[in-house]
Length: 250
Image (cartoon, rainbow, N blue to C red; front, side, top):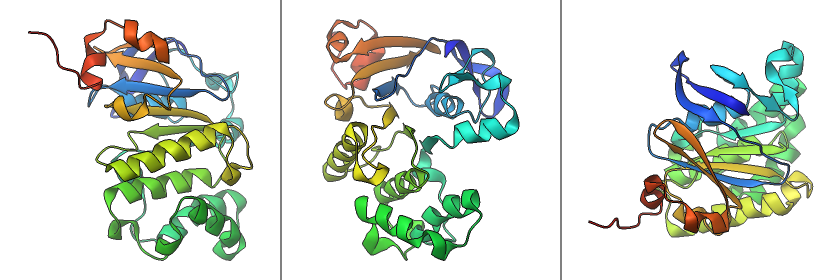
């Protein structure tokens, strides 16, 4: 992204984040922090090609999206997995296995039995096999987010965008997420050992300090690139202290 203004999903003409200069390289693990309502979800939707920016240049896998026809735009979007916040926007009338099969059947124009092996493989890798026939509404919020991750993995994304995935998770669940996403970045069997590029948006930096490699903030509707992990110590932005839950001096 080059001097991009991110639009609000509910008001496409209204920018919620200004001045986004951001390059994500293959194999990166980015952590983007911001308070609630700062536009993190809109940033991820724009990065995935689902929303158009108000202004600026947005390239996805090196191609400027505004120049692509609809067919090529869809092809590029399929290379991105987006794990939505708010429990992942799952279909509660479907089982967990059916939620995973849905994108595969849609894009391959096939029936669910034809993708059963792939669905079972992902369920096993994400620790959800025992819940395959349950509905998302019947499992806790943290596990619903994990189902949303499993669904995003079905099309083998090269870039994975995650919206506050460990919010309201207990320590055990948080450890699972950190270890699993770190494994994806390093090359996991569920994605054929290919290194996956990760971007996590969060309102709490603490769980991600060990896993994240590059950091940025959305502060007062502006984009701020911090840099690599050592740069966190030298960042004077007050929001960073809030996201680290540090006490401020009186």
